Every structure is written in C-alpha cells, then in structure tokens.
Length: 108
Image (cartoon, rainbow, N blue to C red; front, side, top):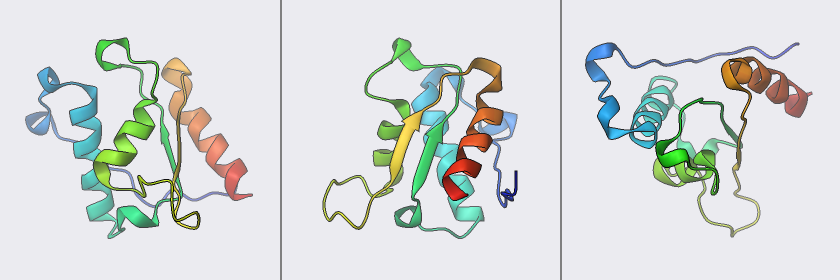
C-alpha cells in the first residue's frame, strides 16, 4: 500500500457527548479534521464512513451521504465536475483497515 495518511482527528473524552448520537459525533470530528488539515470540504473527492455504531439502526441512506451534506462536501448532484463520492463500509472492527485498502485502490 503506497498511500500516506496525512491527517487523523479524534475528539477528547470531554468533547464527546454520545447522547447526541453517531451523526453529531461524526460531523464534529470530520469538521475538526478538515479544519486542522486546512482542507475545504468542497475539495473532498471520497468520503467513507467506517463506523460501527448507527443511530436508530440506519441502513439507508448511508451515514456517509448524510455526513457529506452536513459538512458541506459537494452535497449537490450538479454541476457534474464537483462531486464527492461517499459510501458506508460495514466491516465491523476491521472497517478502518478495509477503508484504507479501498482508498489506496482508488488512488492507485
């Protein structure tokens, strides 16, 4: 695998309010990561949600597509040249490793 990971963000325990749910926590950490990496959400081309927990057992639409809209990563279908491809990866505890492999495949 030749892909290099440049930015990962976590929320410290004091910033986690799990009673608000998966979407709230995912949005907060995604925005934090983008801000720390100095990346505009419109620059994202690929968004993979590899989380295990889902609010209300959401299956469709994908959490990634909902998150894409919340962080402002090209949520509109048009224009065609500005798109972010987003999907969920349901692989349990191995989801993060599988996501890295998929990302490497897309880049390669």
